[in-house]
Length: 103
Image (cartoon, rainbow, N blue to C red; front, side, top):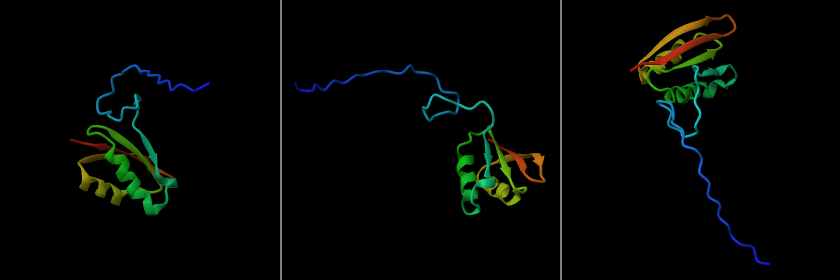
């Protein structure tokens, strides 16, 4: 008995993506994403934050959790795009900084 090749086509329901959401996964986050960099090796920590920051649309925010107040990193981010930052938790074990990408 010979096997037959059968192609089954299915279509998934089309759902509208939230504004600024373009990956096509069908999901989205309601709250500001939190990136805890304390466990990321220091040699790649800034690059990781830069990548996450690039994914944030203008007007949206990212919460960064760091082992110290990341002043140099905030200055580097401000060179890439206009930002506002707000310290939500001021140590002593972790600093939580809300970084908003403006304009």
